Amino acid sequence: MSSSFRPRRSALYMPGSNQRALEKAKTLDVDCVLLDLEDAVAPDSKTVARDQVAAAVSAGGFGSREVVIRVNGPATPWGEEDLKAAVQANPDAILVPKVNTPADLQAIAHKLSVYGASNDLKLWAMMETPEAMLNAAAIGACGRDPEVRLSCFVMGTNDLAKETRARLTPGRAAMLPWLMTCVAAARAGGIDILDGVFNAFQDEEGFAAECAQGVDMGMDGKTLIHPKQIAPCHGAFSPTEEEVAWARKINAEFDLPENRSKGAIQVDGKMVERLHADMGKRVIAIADAIAARS
Ligand code: COA
Ligand code: MG
Image (cartoon, rainbow, N blue to C red; front, side, top):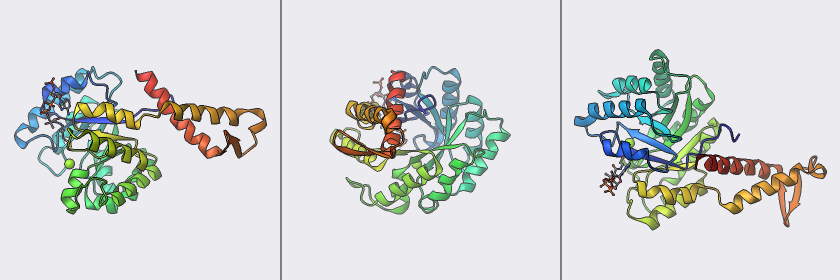
């Protein structure tokens, strides 16, 4: 698990049209960079953004950061050229906006093979439309189909609010059913899921509360819009020393010869089952992967 595990605690969006941000990304302690050609780029800047992002990704220099290009949708005037340029630049993944159905992803995956994409190139899906909320299970199931290459959901809460007219309030009461449906769909499909952005980047308290909520919901990490959100996000999504120590302890206990055939044991006065040891293995893998990065 630890060898292939990639921490995705933080994923920072930046407009592809902002050359300074693209350069700055290489210096930031962030797990993923989302180089955006879509919502953050005005129509007049679409071509410049595509060229800049393609050049930056081809040139490399992002170190251990996972590099993801968000393209414009296939129905837009820029979608096709974005996809071609992204395949050529060969990032870790291409993020597809406004996915409504499994067929949307299958069509993009087909184009990737036509354009000769490397086998390692993954697809990530924006979950941000009413249709996607209703089709979440079927879209998540694409994670089980190697031909579709789906490896991560990204919640697009701003678009979801716009399309549904639900409001983004503190605590996100109106969004919770959709967020949790998408968590279940991601897990059923065996893929990761990242929480939506928090727009008020000067509001540190509000941001911390939303990060904590994302952790509680089972999100693997959070999408971010500003570098100042990275450190508090890592604070929330990294396992604590106590969690890692406990995970190591219960796994060591189950490895003892006298416990090898037991399903439940007592550790420090608590009942511990093998499922807790398995959950602990994931905590250890995350902690090891973070330590290996820094
Ligand atoms: N990625 C990389 N660097 C960023 C950044 C980002 N998302 N946001 C800000 N920075 C950099 C700025 O370039 C600036 O760098 P400098 O000091 O070297 O010049 C520094 O961080 C401080 O920026 P600040 O002045 O606080 O913000 P700003 O007014 O320049 O930008 C936003 C504010 C919201 C426009 C900007 O953060 C942004 O574009 N965010 C991403 C938006 C996006 O991609 N949305 C799509 C998905 S929701
Ligand atoms: Mg959007």
